Image (cartoon, rainbow, N blue to C red; front, side, top):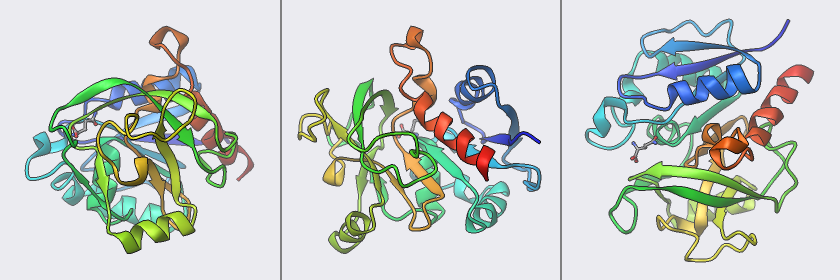
Length: 233
Ligand SMILES: NC(=O)CC[C@H](N)C(=O)O
């Protein structure tokens, strides 16, 4: 039986259809939308929490969505070791739900930034990056106002020591320069995983980099990794 993928829709999600398109039409995977009031995830093998402005980003991005009914089921799903990918607002929701450590601040320059960026894959030891050689540079767009990832020094050291930093902002040549770190994230962090390595949160949008027509199809490498993992699991 083939894997079934779920894309969660909150009031204010706006990258849900991009994610569905990437999974269903580009990756040809069986994909379904899940409303934020759904609670039954028993037939789902992979959860994607997409980007957007859930609840209008009131209070803080993700702070209200974290209390949507589906989140209890997402936490159970994640705690069973099943794969969860949060992209942009999805990453923010995972942080607010306590499934990933740290927090988001407004971008350093206090502006919404929408552009192509380069990110360096730091580890292939996750089911999301198993097909990506560490050190590879992916071109993936960003579109956010609150993507300035932060954490305290002890937590940062844990992320570094546990190989939980999955992506860092870099230049085209793969150097993690200050200039490439456009939003001010600590240690150029663009994406992290949990210690169990089944939850990935990332600010750049791989679902918007799945066709050459969009400027890059580098994001496909992440979805290919997940689908291969599900096929052998
Ligand atoms: N594309 C998105 O997910 C937008 C993220 C977010 N709510 C922000 O601007 O910070």
